[in-house]
Length: 301
Figure 1 (cartoon, rainbow, N blue to C red):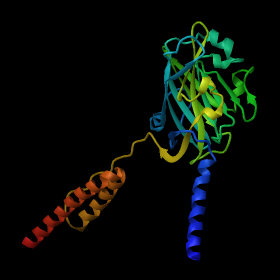
Figure 2 (figure 1 turned 180 degrees about the vertical axis):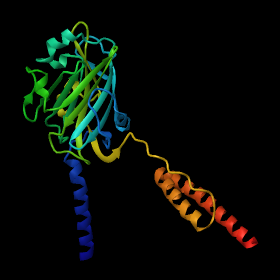
Figure 3 (figure 1 turned 135 degrees about the horizontal axis):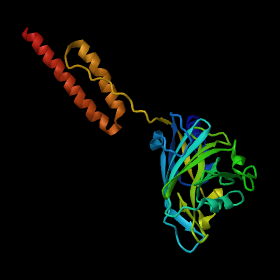
Figure 4 (figure 1 turned 180 degrees about the horizontal axis):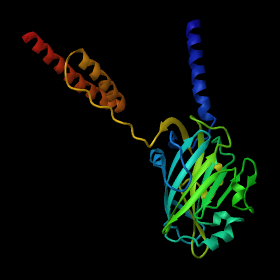
């Protein structure tokens, strides 16, 4: 009886340990895992090759303050590296805001510029957000609701030391890039509330907005309770392709067996689990055929 009770208590304790980390965060959806970049990333609004290995977002969910939804859309990729979150995005906007109009807005109302905003909820509790913005001319602005601090009313240099960003115009499109330091300690295993928002200014003034998620009720994207989240993964990615090992020579005997074994191991490791058994069986059959042929030749000799 005592043994049964002890086992039951142990099971309950284990269940509590598993449940606590989940209930500590709000029940929002997981966008997916953000891999860690093993490559250095240059923040210049040009796409580093390693971004293709990052978590990809499509910005196509629009809400608006004007009379019509915008046709503006975007694609973004997200990676992380020790202490920083990296975001690169390409925005398709058929009508870019003239520079003089943007300059009139940049200091006091930078959200009224063609731009991309990154919203973060570092602890994914839905209480406060960090907000980072880069417009099509590279002007950086921010607001940290945890600290009650922002750059509004300042100039571009106000963002120095807060985050890095860049922008580049290509025809009627533009790209933006962010390097955002983790204001709260974050690393592999962390979940961060996350939202991307395109600000699209139309010719007659109203602002349209395009999101990665349609959960932002009434366009209240500054409310962290509306965000889904990203999960920082320990998986490291690189744009450098691995150099293929030379194939072993076909032959028999102990030397051939020693050469074939690493190839079998590498093949099993490199493919999905469901395919490993098939490949292993084929390689084993080929190796066995080679050994059988060698023994036959020896017996005939």
